[in-house]
Amino acid sequence: MADENLSLVLYGKQDLRLEDRPKPEPGYGEVQICIHDVGICGSDVSYWQNGCIGDMVVRTPMVMGHEPSGVVSKVGEGVETLKVGDRVAIEPGVPCRTCGLCKTGRYNLCGMMKYCATPPDHGTLSRYFVHAADFCFKLPDNVSMEEGAMLQPLAVAVHACNRVNVYLGATVLVCGAGPVGLICMLTARARGAAKIIITDINEDRLKYAKRVGADHIVLAGDPQQTARTIQDSLGGAADVTIECSGAPSSVTTAIYATATGGRIVLVGLGPAELQLPLISAQCREVDILGMIRFANTYPAALAMVAGGQVDVKQLITHRYRLEEALDAYEAARLREGVKIIINCQRK
Image (cartoon, rainbow, N blue to C red; front, side):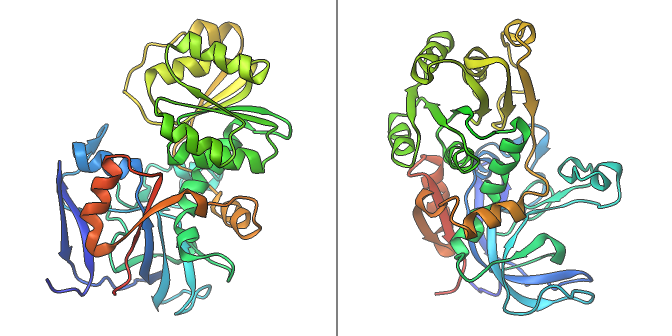
């Protein structure tokens, strides 16, 4: 196979292919990036296995990957903030910049958002990628390329903690001990949470969560019983809850386990419709907040890694090369390890 720009391309449901594609050239305000590392996200696996997430359907071939880092290899006209050789983390969503939501800082909600590896927009799992220069962030010398790739899930976690206002001394419930749940746990700790409890249906993931900093772990089961176990462990209900699984039973647990007057943020994507005990939330003024991706959190995420407040490296358990991307995705499908990173550099 020729290898000008080897890429992992999704053609449709369970049809993932490695193929060579033309090397993209930067336009005005853009930079060409030699991709170094890309993380695999649960949404990547969902697109591969189902060909869609909700109404976002893969109708034309789409390059995968939206958790990238790389090195600037070419600079387009009008770019003054970056130069060839700069190491960067790539914020994968580029909004219109002009709508009301963009102008008020909530650009993650922009209706014209172009987001990597979300149909119909191509992702970054390739040798080369072109991106808006103002959504690329220079990495300081003490931040590795792998850590740069981990900024995307960390940015999600920072946004989640912002949404529920994780405050100094708070007790925090995290539902789901997958990669996003674990990085939310680390972020909540960095923001000063006093006690963090995490739930999951997988005992191995709970053991890993305990190893990287959870104060308490709970094997999830019946929602009301799980909520009682959570409250017994914490000595009361959780001040804030970050729900990362999307499972209906887990969202139910979150409502029962969150303190009166507390807040829940829904990070995990579950079914389009849920049956929930809303009267419990309503009568206790438990706020249930939605969120999608992030806005304005990449600088904070980068500062947290550079300053040592969050160690994202400990979550990386598996590494593959781009030529092994199909094997990497199969490992992700089987939920092997925690975070899988694909290195896109030529051997």
